[in-house]
Image (cartoon, rainbow, N blue to C red; front, top):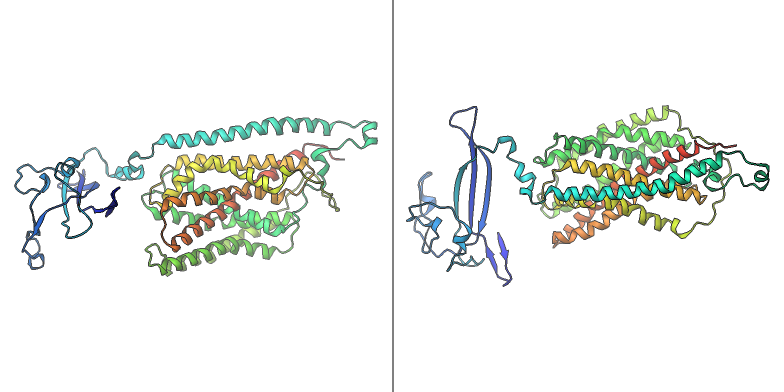
Length: 506
């Protein structure tokens, strides 16, 4: 391994301490288990003379001499009666220099066996999962505290704005209007004015919104079950492939959820192309993900990367997609179309109401900027550790904290979307379906922008690294956009049904 110093000279680690911990097997005699090993590298300039012994001519098991060290340190001195382990003081003592990465280099090592009766076999991975407490639990608790503050602030805003205003609106809308108010047409104003249009199907592609919400419900349920199983200990970070395989299998098994939600929404929107909606649900997001993944894999193969996925694994993914996920989507859609459409508390008029001009702060750019920053602020600390696990080969094991952050993300997305939906209806703008989806889904935009900031830590030096990193981060952000967007639609739909069912409509 190479290392650089302030003098711009390159040195090489040519000595390692190998420390092996073991303990006796309780159920067997004279058998031992290695429960931990530690490798500590050093750079030591050995002055040596090559020996005449040729290791190729020696039989197996015979000892031979590679070189004679002229200036050995204490641990490498054969004349020393006391065998000691190499430490930092030996390497940095007076007269010692590190080994430059040039010329002839002698590589040495020493091994120490330590019996550790306290370290159990089942706990051997703990030091690696916790990274030797490099990141204390206090950091995660501070992240949770930061997220809870955001939740409390949002909840306070909803309590102060929504609850108080809605209570006043309910009292005003439900009271009997006087003759003077009826004559002046003052009995209705505010969000009650759009009662005949609030549940009108979206003007832009109801089919696409239904498919997006169905796919979002599938990703949401998959992520929830994955985190639950991980926090319960069923998916160990020690086996890195187990987590990814669980995500794939759970996503496939949740295909029925996607088909059912898509069918219920599309039937509510009075859509007729149910075959097209179901097919797009089965092939839409998985098709985008598989196409991008296949292109990224071809790039990895061209770079001779060890992370390239073999062709047989691609076949397995196609079998999971078309053999299990797609039939489950059609199966769920069948039951979804068998169900009645979602019932709304008010009727929808045949003629759309004209929408007045909206203030600048209710425009799409402002709502996207504010709607995404609060949920992102509630989870960005855990996002850093997740990215470190994916791109920096670190372990992520605090799934209990992740479960809390996951719930906080859902709550913040729902609350901020409901708040903006109320403001939008008060402005007599009933086009809330796609607006709710984008307001909550804009969290993914901040995640993608944050990936640019995190990319600086990777010290990329090739075009392929840029393509692979931003390709996969774009795919992850796209999936997050669909998941959080569906949360916004479901929460706004529940909110609108609740408030309009609480008032009297003539």
